Image 1 (cartoon, rainbow, N blue to C red):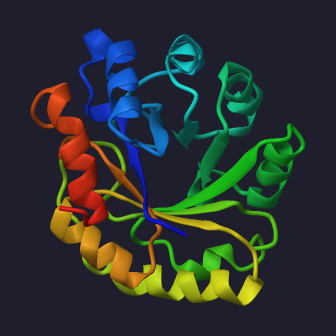
Image 2 (image 1 turned 90 degrees about the horizontal axis):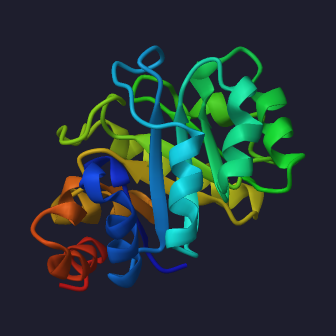
Image 3 (image 1 turned 30 degrees about the horizontal axis):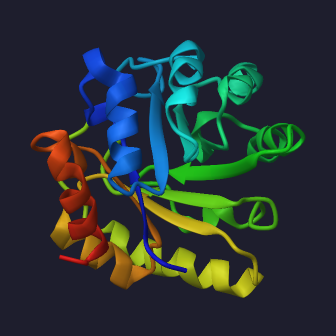
Length: 219
């Protein structure tokens, strides 16, 4: 599977969000990564389902919605109705991860599980038959622009082995501190989807394609 790039619109110009989504679509983004934060599970407050719904007409690419919220279950249907193609929840956000994933899959879309840096890969053990995506946070979630936590590389490698053991097609996504150098490290460890914010949105929109290409290792 080729390396896919999922620009995080958290780093986009929020005054021009629809235009920014169109720009990264045109620049070759594979997924549109939407960071949803509640000011409770993580120390930041971003956007809700209404913004996802407003952005949906601006791109036909996969809307990869990362819910950093707790509790998460009451909002699953709202984000799916708004246009999410993949809904990723945190293993740490509630006591009943299996039930949460069942609720997402029952709506006919893909489900993902995210792990913060201190959560071990073993947290995934009993949901590997359900997940379509695993997201390893390589920073502490809540803010963009943080430095990559290198201790997550062995975890990425461990999860890659867990995925291969299932024989299933599961995305292994890494999010946090991704730039051309850390992208290479994450890919070498086993990642095949990279979330990047500031590394994609730096410069003006005419530079986004070059920025995405650099993360893939094309430049």
